[in-house]
Image 1 (spheres, rainbow, N blue to C red):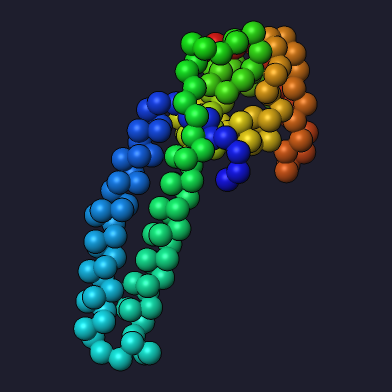
Image 2 (image 1 turned 135 degrees about the horizontal axis):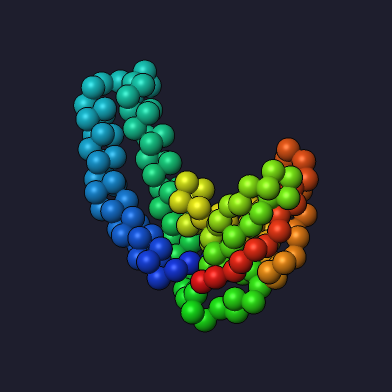
Length: 157
């Protein structure tokens, strides 16, 4: 992930805790799994050993990704943002012009995105389409299923 990664203070702390856990407990568990598999004999025909080595690769990639995310993280606070237009950390109440359904989202970084919690990434099609919009404006957003139109009803912190 290139560039700046905007996160809340809480998310940055969660990322640091996860990184610490991966580097300590996670690495120890994988080392133990590799050692156990090694004891079972010939490494050329040892599927357990291959699986443990593959898991180690995924684990190290996750650590590298988290380290990069933390290194590029910039803490943002909702109280410092201009709420006259949609920006990161804005809570936005929208009306889908096609279905007339009202939805509410908070725009967050990719790291914090969780659709079930109503948090969408600013890099998602909907997030990108809403950035900079003001109350009353209609955002026309191209998504894989076609074109969506959302009217911005309210913006809050």
